[in-house]
Image 1 (cartoon, rainbow, N blue to C red):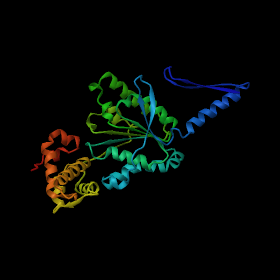
Image 2 (cartoon, one colour; image 1 turned 45 degrees about the horizontal axis):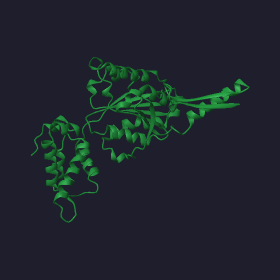
Image 3 (tube, helix red, strand yellow; image 1 turned 30 degrees about the horizontal axis):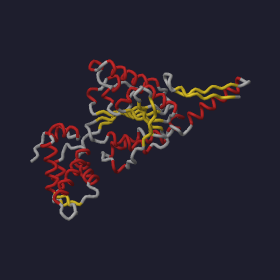
Length: 329
């Protein structure tokens, strides 16, 4: 038996072709099946975090990513919300065999929606770190044109997770889209529809603008099973955010309750930037290298972000409308 492996880099689509010649046809077929099975079960791609990128010639290639390890205490979300998210993701992964044996389908889709900076992407990264053994495929920006190929990878490497950020870029109402965007939307819907129920593939979609999502994506059963809202943090969550992002800083603050009240409507991203800017104000006044963040430094940073930064800065950092309409002096 002889095997010839050829790299077809100048054909479309490029790939690797394995040709086998043997006196016994069945022996050659067995060899091909073994190569195919080894490829599917191998560790070159399986269990990694991957994305597809296009080069200047339009050829797709695989990129590997090392995501930061996110701990549960870094997610400042209401406990009931965390329970809902984990039940539909981590619990499914943990009990996949039992659910499949009970004829419960494993294919599922989650839609994370809410203002910028409220923890949607961070939650997705946390889930990736908790669902061990799953292949993760990231779809962002220009890579969205490779939805079909990514879905093929997901089938081959299942159990797998597809993370598609800012789905509103392709998932808006059909009448407000370009022809190219419509094609991508239809491809996404087709891929989500075309998966067998027993395929352990999880879609996690995120958006800041759920109100403009295509109804066929947001409402039709079988595509999205759970829509989970990430609201601006309440007072207790804001207090925890100050504690989280204040690690490593020394504070002289007389009344934290007042600051927490003044940041009503702020997102986690806003509070993180607020404390970073406060540290800069404190550093400018420090002569001995000992940095102490005082209450007036936080007030100055708050005024600069909400007044000097204008509406665009507030929106970029996830300040809700309620927070924007408050007076800050």
